[in-house]
Image (cartoon, rainbow, N blue to C red; front, side, top):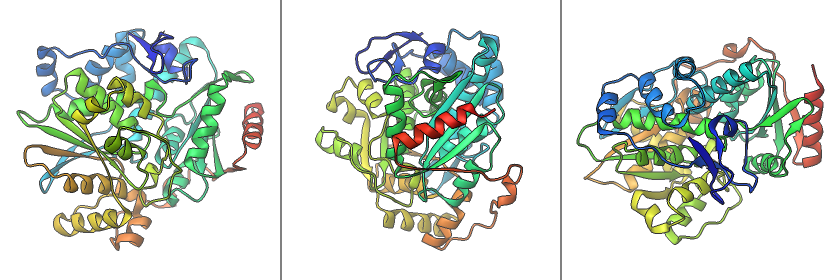
Length: 431
């Protein structure tokens, strides 16, 4: 399987090459040259199979330059936690938050880390991971790459714009992880990283520069697995997946799963007040916007990186896009009311991001389809925010004692390319 740039459909490279390349030479993101289709026998075989077996079925379609034996080892190290489906009221919730940082990012980032660790050990490489986070990606990167030989990881996040627990998860970390609080927005952090990569900066010292954001195809493809796995649990049902959406990586994985033949009817892209994709859905015109702060902070993205992948998967055709996808924006007031309602009616606590998806499904209710809500983060991660906004007390809290293994450390930077570059260079020089 080869991968091409979504912008020109040129620059075809192998999976292992794409794993360590961030942007194509034309600035585009990599996608598979062909979306493979499951046979009827494969669909039947996967229906009653384990998550790990489904992961092997899916990932083997794309990854043919890692041996089957080694891929199995990687999958067994990566898909180590359950992904249950729970029926709450009329909806089914796909709980993606049972990994080590309690967010769906653990699936993609965890598998990416094991893939990279495997290749690094074989090729004796050293890499510098540069990633931006609006909350959950940074924690997942910090945990997944902790103490991995040959890896240093720098995590940029917007200062004072993430939850207390998210910051704890990113700043009480192993010695090869370097968190940097930037005086700016997530979009500023993301813009800096894209500038570095787009300027063809390949190395810092002895380290090859790599991204762990969802621009990396090695992080995106593992997310296809849970769409396939979940969709096969339902039979003769029109399924609509409702996806809390920020940087559009999660919906990209869902679209790939559908195009592979997973029995998915359609999707709802559930956004908060950051709504450029909603505007595209309504008008056919896309333009980035300045991000605004909301209660669902991990989705506070005004220029989602992966949306150009989404457009490419639909041949940049607005009509084709609308055949599969509806997009809607949900306010913070609706988010809070939804958290309260679900708790009152079902004694089930959801985090703000999941609440955005639940409300989106309610606003776009369909009697002919069964909604599957992607529950992307544990409410425990947002215990303080949920109590303050919705008055709901989470009895099983996570305390700072969970992270006392490492001392807290943090770099700080102004929103300055020069200052950030200086921090990067100083980190690379550290032993």
